Length: 105
Length: 105
Image (cartoon, rainbow over all chains, first blue to last red; front, side, top):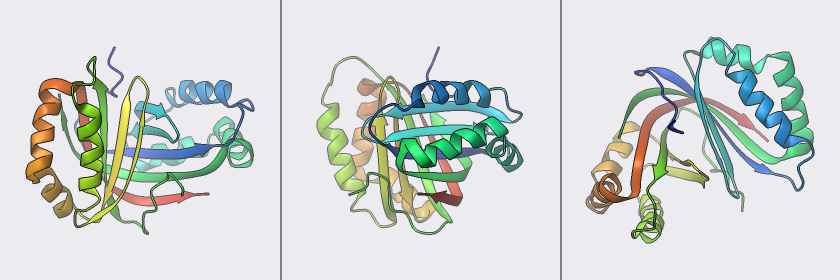
């Protein structure tokens, strides 16, 4: 299995989530895995790519803005977002972007 | 210094580069650092964020598509792209996306 998300022809949407973590796990690992599992079940979900060193980057791909909005408003996800702001992240940035073109090998 | 790129108000552009590396360094480390240094000098460059685990993700931010096109056509960068395809990457994907909205803490 490739780790690269197998996205369709553009256009589609990317949510670029970059973050700097606080010290300690504080329940993060378990909830992070659960959020990926949950995202995969949402309508409009296309794929996810993730890596963390000093900085964490998770890019999730979606068919349209409506799907992203619905995922943001998912009850279990909202709970995780609240804990993220309070506990897990020193800083983070969410960027919502329309993928216009892609290529690769 | 925050590791999160200090980008301006949207709209601006993101180049999402995700990759899976081959074994061994093969000169990658040195050229990768040089490419970041070189990107920072380009017109329209706004910032860069990078992390690698099994998968590598580098997101660079740009004011417009013209700047991205010029950076892709930079002679030294083209040489690196050629070596990347030949030597460093098992697979990669480049996605060019227009950032429409952002928020964070």
